[in-house]
Amino acid sequence: MNPVFGRLVLLALGAWFIRAAGPEWHGVSALGTNLLGAVAIQAALNLSVPVLLVWVVGVGLFWDLATFSALGHHALVMGGVGMLVRTQKGWWVGSSWGEQAVGAILAGVAFFTWDRFLHCWEVRSWSWPFSLSIALVIAGTINGLVSVVLGTWLGRRSEPVRVLRRGGRQ
Image 1 (cartoon, one colour):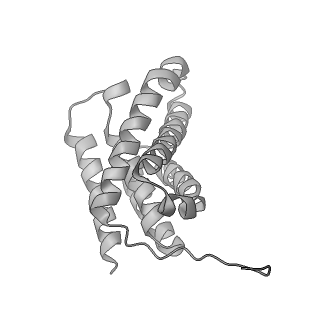
Image 2 (image 1 turned 60 degrees about the vertical axis):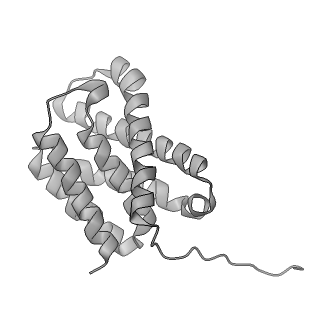
């Protein structure tokens, strides 16, 4: 079994434990789902596409069942962010720590936005003004910074990015 895959599963379980056992905070301080976003960003950077698909479906369905969310809710959010990050992997691997932090913050904001939208749709409660202003930015920032720390801890064992050159003088 891929050791990075196992670490990412353990990190997702740790994020779920923080959400399940931690204090019941809402809004800006709700870190449980946000930590899952940080782990999803690193999964997209460190796993191959087929393994990422297995990870997203497995962890997403676990989170949906364990948090009594609509089935597929978290898998859809993690898959969306995974696809977004995965398409930018070439840039991500070659960028500086600061650029990676900004990219992770943007991906974290996207994760929180999609998660919040699907949650509001699920419970039919549209509390957009607060969700899209303060909580979105703060949660996305925390999520992105935690993702950079997780990336350092995981050690970037992902497969190399291939660069194809065609024709022309070199």
